Length: 213
Image 1 (cartoon, rainbow, N blue to C red):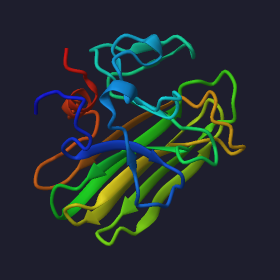
Image 2 (cartoon, helix red, strand yellow):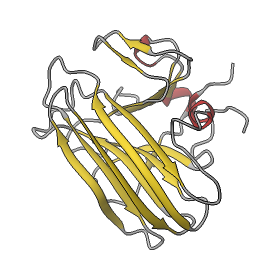
Image 3 (cartoon, rainbow, N blue to C red):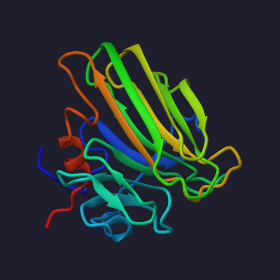
Image 4 (cartoon, rainbow, N blue to C red):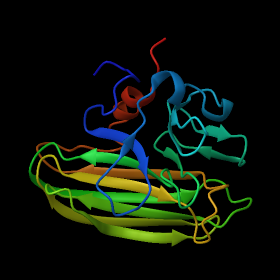
């Protein structure tokens, strides 16, 4: 796949946001000039998407080493996706990384979310949602994560080609979206051949986030 930031959706992955957890809709990041950034928060090699207001955003470490985040004192690993929600009770509260099943089959998921900015705030919410072939959304996992903590889930699910799994980050329990920088790591294995989200197929990150130079 040729690296490009002008296509979203791009292959099996799409990136965007929405106002509620259990929704099948997704507002995509698509505006290359206004929403794509090669250096999110002025961090070189932290490439991704944000709205014109800054949040929500979603970005990848496109280097080969952990990437220090100056605002939190922590680092984003090479196998992590950075996600930050938008303001509570807004059209952009929940930031979403969506994976679309390429074929019918049973898929095995391991995913974890962790707080990458524990200085202040009220933590964040982590959600995993299945959107079926009838565009009905159902929760597979959900947790309110306290400041500085993490959460994870492992499960298997039968999917039809074209169905979606949405990996979501929202605001904390009090609705405060500040200091909600979150790291997501996950793997998805299944048919017709193993397909991983971050650990085994970092190419999706590069293809989806890197700007042509």
